[in-house]
Length: 321
Image (cartoon, rainbow, N blue to C red):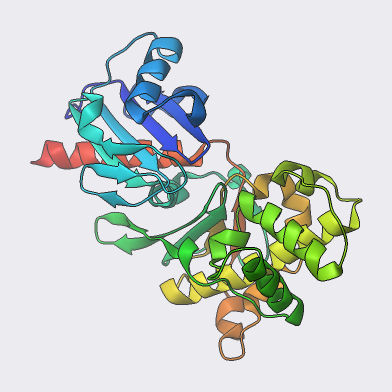
């Protein structure tokens, strides 16, 4: 596999953090992994330069694949929850490609080990179409479709669909959010790290109580606080409905995988929540959904694994040419 010179640069760029790694041989996993705070670097090229200088010995990569949390248009990117925008050509790497972050996460799915996954109910994931979604700084959605040549990722912006509300209390929450300045509430507004904060604030209004301003991490950690506990419960239930909608839309009989930065911190609470009940709660398709496995990705840097797998596949294509 000599189409691209090693090492390869792989990255997972979110609205808060930028994760980087190096791939040094065809079958190697990403190494020299480092996480840089996006706020510390004015642009993506600045962050890449800092990573290569400070964590990779100043190497010059022969190829790069960067997964970004935002829409991709050819060689151009614009992060949804960050000011970073531009062209991947600005990196000066001989071959550089962009993926949506959940597109890269989708590519990683066949390469994850059993220890990288925690079951959230249903049968083990199968070989059909797979869906991946998850709350972090935003709410990402992607898919993976089996083809004659392997797997093909399907990027999307499903996190911006209208928020899935089912219970009367959830309608009250949406009304509260609208009164707080969100005229159109989309899924990402509640099913994300910042969404936990909005949910907490809205539930305080619905319950008629005064609550302190807490971060998403503080809300998730305070299981003994009634309002925080209710916030996480509502969050997990609504996420179940959202995941069911994604599964139906993609026909994801091969399983629904959940990633992102929020859920690995509350694994046990997701497993004991109404997530799976709400996932299968559909008046017409409950049996269809019950046959779809749901799993939580607990691997440390799965999008880097996906970016590396994408580069390996592209390198094989270049050799064939």
